[in-house]
Image (tube, rainbow, N blue to C red):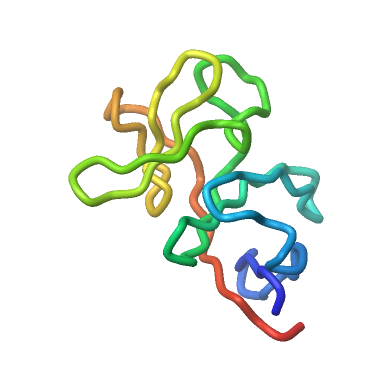
Length: 109
């Protein structure tokens, strides 16, 4: 099984699902040069958001700590600790800030 992201209207295979350990993030380079932060939670659900922290400009969100608040999975930036919802990309600490969230699936190719 491979981890795939929906880019534009096509699915892009990022890596084998086994390359992402539950509870930890990894960064992936996308075809257009952007970086995505990929996560699989402990229940096996996959998420992907932009890897760039909008508060610092550093590509570090894949190194953040995963948690949950009000039943929603988030990653906390390792730099300034702002939390980003893994489904929507919305910053939980500043409602005017968000990162891009990607549709993710486990696929064969």
